[in-house]
Structure formats: C-alpha cells, structure tokens
Image (tube, rainbow, N blue to C red; front, side, top):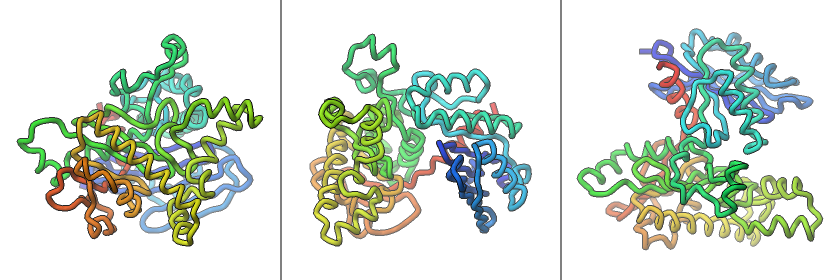
Length: 406
C-alpha cells in the first residue's frame, strides 16, 4: 500500500516569521516532502523545499503567511509531489498554547479559531502566528484541519503539580497555572519508550507502573515525569521560560530578580522579558546558545563556557532527582531532541552522580551514533538510560488523521 493510498497529512508549524511544513504518511512515518519559508515579512525571504531527493531553494520577499503558503502550494505543484498525488487527507497545525480549553487535538472550526485567539495573552509570541497559519490554510486547502496543542499532554497534571502558590482568585482570573510545553514530543517519546522491547521485556510480570523521566534537550529544553503514560509533572510552566537552563532562556530563577532589575537596573518589563527569554541561558552565561559551539569553547579552555555547562548539567540532575521523588523511583531516563540525541557528553554529565537511582551509561554505547531508539546503560542496570529520537511531525500527523477520519 502506498503512502498516498493510505492517506497523508500536511503538517504546518506557523511561527512569527516562518512556516515549516512536512507531508507525512502516518502509517509508515515516511516524509514525502518538507520545507520551510523563513524571514516572512522581512526584506528578503528564504524558501527551501525538499522532495524526491531534490532541494529547491529561493531567495525572495515573502510579505505574509498567506503569500508563504501560496508559495509552498505552488512548489508542490512545480517540484512535486502535488498534494493530490501525495494523498493529503488533512492538515495538522501545531499550536503552542491550548490553555485550559484544549486537553486534546480538535478539528478546527470558526469557534475553535476564536478560542485559540482568546489564548493569545498566554502565548503572545506564538499563538498569533498559529492562528494566522490556521486561517490562511483553511482558506486555501479544502480538507479537514486539526489543531494539535503543545500543552495538551500536560492537561493531566495533578492539581498539586499544576497549581502555583499565589492568590487563588488572581490565578483563576488570569489563567495562571502550570501548562507545560513540548507535550507532543514528550507524549511521542514516552510512548515509544514503553513500546521498546528493552522496556516491555523488563515490565512483563513486574508489579507497579512504568516510571519515566523524559529530557527534551534542544535550544528549548524541558523535563517530564510520566507514570504509566500519564504526565504527572513537567518543568515548563505558564510559559516556556520556567525550568531547565536553555539556549537563550534562563529557566528557574528567583522571581524577585525581575523586581530587582526593574527597580535597580532601570530595565522595563519588556526589556526584562527579552533578557530572560532571548539573552539568558547558555547565551547569557557564555555568549553562545548552540551546544556544539559551547563544547568548542570549553575545548579551547574557556572557563566561562565550562561554568555554563556545569550550570546546565546541575539543573538537569536536580530535576531528575526531583522527578524520581515524584514518581517514587525511575525505571527509564530518556534523552531526546537535538542535544539529547546527539551529545554523548551531556548525557554522561547528567547521569554522573545519579548511580543511587540506578542510572549510569555504558561509555561505548553512549558514544555510538544512531538514528534509532536505543539503550545506552550497561546490561543489568537497575534502571535504563535511553536515547529516543523525537518526531513531533509524525505525532501530529497521526493524531490529525485519526481525528479527521472520525
């Protein structure tokens, strides 16, 4: 059976100045085409379309998301595959914030669009572009459209994990709670772990639920605690700023730092927002936000870069330990996303000192490069350490097609 005959999904990720896309076959995971339009609304846009092993690149102004999507559709007709030939049955939209309104994917109609728009105050950098992408795509593509929310997997958080200790009335009026992000990735990876032979063979006949800690480590980074497939804790909160040290985000800090910078450094609220989201994390500590560049600086003897990595690893170890307490132990610790999948030194650095939880890595296994899900802990370990490549587009495609067929 071909991908077209079984049905494919066009997955759209509409950012503030970009549009990423893939045509995915949910049944096989095959990617028939992919691409990105960057610098939308700027003087010169960059377009890249990949299909049939060929790459089409263009440099041209792209005024807005409507023009970007029209350009993408023209490239499908010009460079292939046409959406009809590819068997596109639905469009899946990544939406960053679903708030308390959306705990699962939903078929998009006018009311859903307005509800997503109402959540813009919770995600002012992301949801406006998500709404624009949905509106444009619905105008141009006459197939079912499904919104898949980054926050949905964490709608199951227990009240004790989701609730901040601030005035309850203020929190309720303004939607202040822990929502969590990267949920599509955490859900996909934790399900892949549970289905992996190395895990399923250990859990057969074993009493008790499967206790997972998942570390999604990219430029953005988040941790989750997953108990038998259900998320019970996560590091990101009302926004993606809370939690781990990231490429440009600070992660956890004393909230009074904001007041201190406003009162004593003369920074405006917007300037503090920019500092914590775009000028902090590894970039703030060492001047670079790419882990590969940071490792290069460390190799050259840069002491500030070495400190940045230690801060990064310290925060990660602290979260793994905290989540072990939440779960009552750890059966599997999993690394995913760009850094988690590719940087053996980071994985070894996180696990160092966590032997009391049964966690360790086999240096040879940890150093191997592979695109497959794999175990990197020694044989006979009390707990497994795994590397599982994430695939958010495939996860969105599967959820989209399942809902569109109902």
